[in-house]
Image 1 (tube, rainbow, N blue to C red):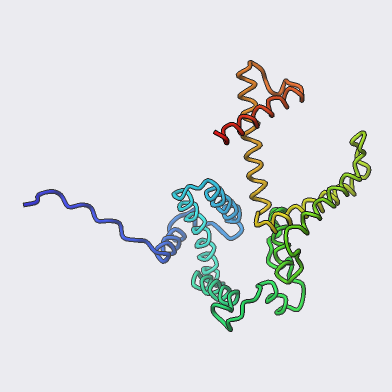
Image 2 (cartoon, rainbow, N blue to C red):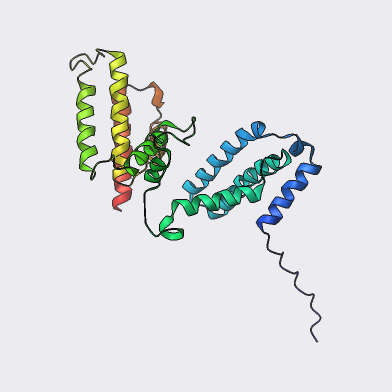
Length: 268
């Protein structure tokens, strides 16, 4: 006869309805949750979106799961607040999403003809839709990528990466023309700002045409620079020196040593 204690039952799976019910309960019984408005929640929504992005970059599924939950909480929170105002509820949010996805994929849910979403928007509004729906606070690199994506959606685009590559070279020359080749002095600060903006925009276009997102590429290089600089400090400290007290030439020696160390690690 088996006298062992029975194993505890596995927790029942949770659903989106359970999460929505929890959010409504928090609004009813938690003083802090009850006090929140759309405006007061804005910083949390932005913060949670960045934390999801960090989790994706880190490649940690458990962290990504938890951060997606935190982001979902914000979606539910705003939906419940809106429902209390009599504006719309979570079911309306879901319905709007489904309708939008059906409209964006007519080849799957409509007449069977595959069309660019940007071209469909342009045909519907009969006016420029380049900026429509892009948040005002979107980071500049991401905004440039999305603007170029939208222009490409209605046919205003290079055939391949060679076009934007040539444009990058052209913009570099225009920047160089505004800097004195002997002294490095800027000849026209306002013109230089404009040309550097054109150069950055061209680089983003080159990224896009090679299936690279400029913001992600820059994030990667930022992380690499921080890592290399920390290694420079470590190597200098091992020599009994302080990196910030060294000349540029001496710092460059450590920079070259870090790059050589990285190459060695890659080849081994």
